[in-house]
Image (cartoon, rainbow, N blue to C red):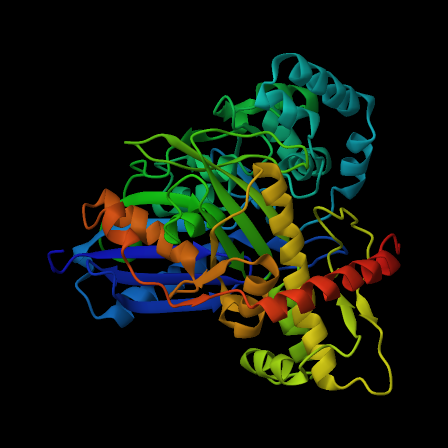
Length: 513
């Protein structure tokens, strides 16, 4: 690989952090700047982001990364953007002024709308009719339709709430004066000073308004839920020519040549380029993604297909995903409750316990997703006795993370009818050796930790660099990993037994509210 003085700028807007980095042609990270993302909670169930704050914070970390790198910013040949999915905003077409804050993917304000639609005759008939069509045709699209999940995670119902409850938005819709976008659309629009109004295919597919089988906005969905399609942006490839950062913003014109959703970027950054490759991101929550190649698969378990990426010179690559809301949030909780002082020591404390002494923790701060599917489950310890120590409590919390991920992996194995060879793991919690070694044992497979734990940034850096001609996928595949954890038979026997008891404990905490 020829060494030269060209660089890639990457931006990642996650759920808890905004990050920017500069990398050179040898993929050496020259600088990183980050800022904690401030979420707003104006009412119970509301989770928002101020759009102007988001823009200014993104600018701040980007300018700091460029400044700290001590490079000639005119040598930045590409920029990649990775964002959290399904957090959206609407704004006036004529002035660019937002109607409201970003309504994030964690927001529950549309819960009544979600519940009403979930019980509706329309939705249930659609599911039934889709399943009948699937039995007749075996078309995967109809199988996916039969398992349509009505959820607060989807943009659809939060957008319905906004249209119904924000008078100015409703009024401007009648005058065709509304633009809609998730975070990446807003950032592109701002960086190009309104010249580019698009969304990339990986972010579009996570809204609930996009048909991954037909690769277009879902006209039937928009018709049923009364979403005006005229407000939806153009959907483009992940390495589309998104235009240039206006010179007045960063002092130079930088081509924006990659935009991806965070989990798609993480899958690409983990070099999971081929069918059957698997990655697990362990951040605030856990996201397990499987590359399903050039085909979108329906599901018997409500695992809806998503577009991983589509590049200008290749096929559309799909993925399936299962997730859990509570992973890093559990580590943060045991720090806040002073069970541990910092995240690294949790691994040492758990190892020192040499067993949980019959103590189990149920991690349902946000309820349970697949395969338990109980939003009303609660959290807590069970099995605590006078002989229980802090070490046992900490170990129980970490084991609960392992057991949740074990459930997620089994859902995906069932969907794909086959075992994975290995899983590549990234994210802040992947630094925990106890969790990764335990996963390797209970899953009976290799767990490979990536050198960089921030794979979403790495993913858009990779794609932007490929687009700029700095490297190839083949070159990236040869980059070393950090550490591989292998199964231990004795630990496997222990965890399989403890998992069965943990599942009995879970039953005590479900249907709580």
